Length: 182
Image (spheres, rainbow, N blue to C red):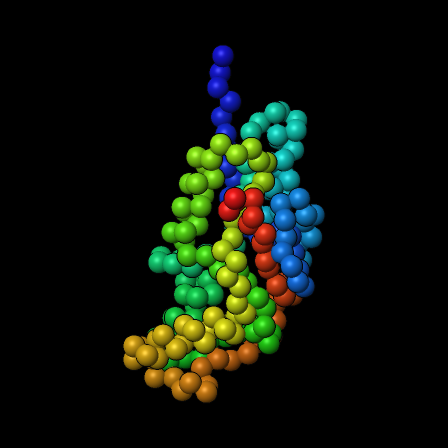
């Protein structure tokens, strides 16, 4: 008899779309706001369809935004750091009030491992931190850290430039991670 293999698909909170208040639960419908987030959601649906059609055992893990070392330079926090190091104003989409949930990459890796080794039965699980900040708040935190370490010469009243918002830019992401944290 062949032992059934579990596969884990790492997904994102973006598939749910934006939520004004509260947080998304695992059984909430997907409402992606852009073709980019819809493409991520489509992979989740393909995994689910394999489970139904071929009785595979693909688990979907929806994670929040990560930050940490070696992150791709175009991502939000590395992009801020790059601009501040070069003494250039960092671009912020729209009014900067978009809220994201953040998790340190090592915490995410530990959470993934905890999920992989868990005996809990689940098809889909949200993994988040509950730490939610606007892009403006994150930019200010990064700037203040860099300023305190003399890593930028920018003025604390003039270190950001507001740029046109992205089409389909979600206002707020928030995951309910209660199932994972029990």
